[in-house]
Structures are given as structure tokens and as C-alpha cells.
Length: 142
Image (cartoon, rainbow, N blue to C red; front, side, top):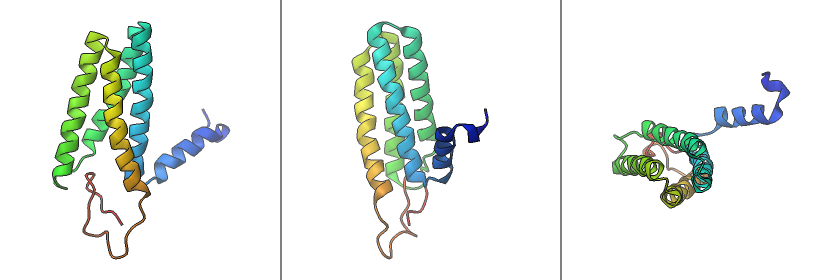
């Protein structure tokens, strides 16, 4: 498919390619939230295949979030890593037990983290700050 024929796709691709790291994390959380909502709905409807697909996509996003952490940036990265691993275990358990409530609890937990990252992504840089301050991704925040 020609990207130029689908303006919304071109816009989405450009948004990802030009976004700062903190904004990319917010986008990942947004994607996880969408897949978790689909998974919970499919689980309630008894559609194990659709739930499994959505949970797989959400799990892949959690794996990506985990892979982007810079554990040398401080203890926040380690805590986030623990949370992502916990969420993956909970989603596996939710799939086995066909438990939509467990999926929703993970969605709420990730939603809270998403809001924190969104605040970080939208915060203006303080004068004189930046070069020494690093995010859990290991990137300097200007």
C-alpha cells in the first residue's frame, strides 16, 4: 500500500518517527490500553481467539516497554521492569482463567503509568535542567 494514498497512515508513521522518547512510551501505553479493552470485551463474550490475539498484542507492547528500559538510569527503571513483568504474568493468568476483571486491573495499573509518562512528555524543560537528568529510558530530558 502506498503510504501517500492513506493520509492517516502517513500521519501516524510521521508521528512515531518524529516523537521524543517519552511520547513514544505514551503511544505504547495507549496501544496496550486499546488491546486490553479488546481482550476484556472478547473474554466477556467468550471469544477466546480474539481475547488471545489482543492479549498477545498487549503482551508484545509490555515486552517492548521492558526492552526500552535503561537499568543503569536508576531504580525507577527496575521498578518499571518489575511492574511490566507482573502485568505480563497477570495477563497470562487472565487468559488461562478467562478472567476479564484481571485484564481490567492490569489496564488500570498501566493507565496510571501512562498518565505519569504523559505528564513527563508534556512538561516543559526547566531552565538549566536536562543534561544530567535521565529518564528510565536512559535518555536525557532537555
